[in-house]
Length: 128
Image (tube, rainbow, N blue to C red; front, side):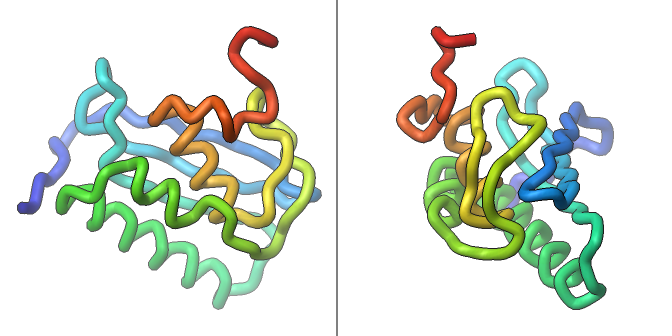
C-alpha cells in the first residue's frame, strides 16, 4: 500500500545542536490536525559528503517506509538507542536533553512528540 502525501502539505522544521553540531530536520505531515508524519528530511552542518549522503538516503528510506504503512512508533523504536556521531548533550529541544547519535535523537523525537512516549523524555510535560 503506497499512500503518497498531498502536493501541498504542512511540515515542521526543528533545529537542534548535538554536542556542538547543528542538525536540522523537517517532518512533512499527511494531516496537519492529527500531525501524522509521512516524510522526513535531515540536514547536518560540519559533515562530509559521505555522511550527508547517507543521512539523505536514511531519510528517504524512512519516508518511503512511512508512506507504505510503517507505523511511526516502529520507525522511532528502530532508531532509538542507536549509537553514532555526534552524540551527547542536545540543545534546542525542550524535552530531549541527551542522545547517543542523530538517529537516536530522531527516534526519541518521533516517539516522544508523535507517539506519547513520556518515558523517553528527559523533561516531562508537567515540568514545562
